[in-house]
Amino acid sequence: MEVHLNSNLDAVVRSAASGSKPRVQSTQEPSDTSFAQTDSLNEALKSTPDVRPKAVARARELVASPLYPPTETIRQISSLLAMNMEQSSN
Image (cartoon, rainbow, N blue to C red):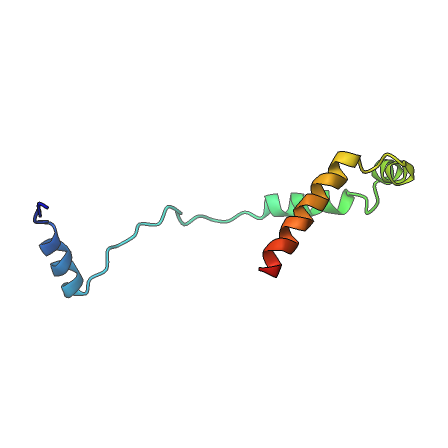
């Protein structure tokens, strides 16, 4: 086994002993914050309907379908549940 001295260790020890902390420069510059974007987002949110009729109609169709959810999806979910049950019992 060969040991190599780390000459940078002294600099680290001196830095830690001095108690000075390295300065971290902020990436943010002080600016006059404009809330125009926030206001426009709030307006867009207000204009969005609480209920989307097309989404509700699609959900009703899916729920009424005997093929929903697909058999493969049910198998995958049951496998995940079984794995979780095995892990929690150990």
